[in-house]
Amino acid sequence: MVYVRIPVNEKGQVVIPKVLRDSYGIISGGEVMIGESEGKIFIEPAMTKEEFAKALEALPKWNMGKIDSDKEYAEELESR
Image 1: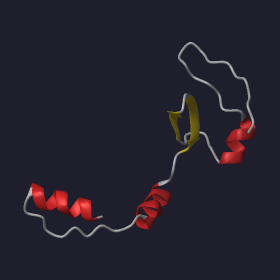
Image 2 (image 1 turned 90 degrees about the horizontal axis):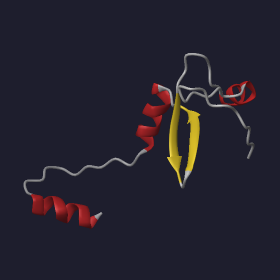
Image 3 (image 1 turned 90 degrees about the vertical axis):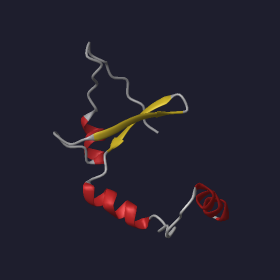
Image 4 (image 1 turned 120 degrees about the vertical axis):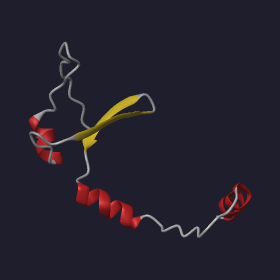
């Protein structure tokens, strides 16, 4: 893991170092995802629409059929 110390401006903005932008394919006008986990902030390249669609296709398909009541819904969820 590489750490780089960079300044934060008055608007809370930071500049991602060029070497990291190049390594992760982050381009001017592109987008990144920013979040936090376990007390740390992370930045990662955002998925393209195509990558997102492919990730959705890889998810297991749920065929729950028709459910007429909350009880049937709860029973179906418990059976999975």
